[in-house]
Image 1 (cartoon, rainbow, N blue to C red):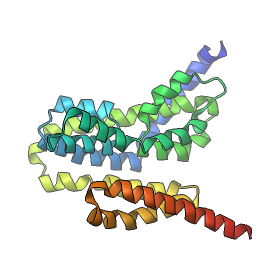
Image 2 (image 1 turned 60 degrees about the vertical axis):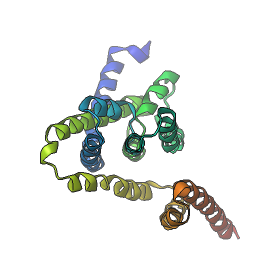
Image 3 (image 1 turned 180 degrees about the vertical axis):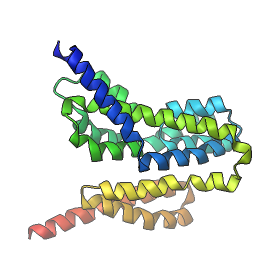
Image 4 (image 1 turned 90 degrees about the vertical axis):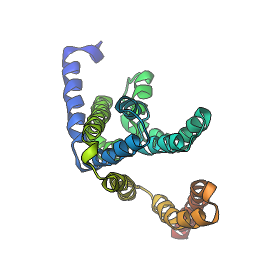
Length: 245
């Protein structure tokens, strides 16, 4: 019963708004600017503002939305587009698994984790991993709910405004804004990596990505990720073994 006491509700509301404030940050600003580019891309692909807003709310991670628009522009079938989006979102599963221990409270219902997993993307994940440790464990789900929902609502507003003023936005500027997101992803993931294996994986990926784009353009991301990730794991294990000897 203490879980639903008035004092508990007030605390949860306070920490929810703390998560709302967390969304107004440099990472949140970079993501919002990137959504300007995404909205321009969606408009050029022939999507309506309603369809783009729906994508922003439902297909949360920005790369997945870009993959979906690419599939639409290439004339791919619905099953092929769905499969491409699913594959692009598999990368979020390890992030969800890593975040769950940070969110878990003593009596947190399982359905809460299912609901909050919808908010997991690189920006919300990095902010949560950096700042949730200062939040009481039993209030972390409320805080993360405020963070994730605010990021989604803010970017839905950015999409709506971009569609309204799209005529005045140069296409080159709209496209270039999309590149802010991968640059932010790279720098934030490098800074938040807790083991050297993560640094190895990003370094190998940056080297192997362009190589496989030339040698095997159809499977360049898959090949670069598989080989680079395996090499990073091996290098990390060798480094740890060398320190023990």
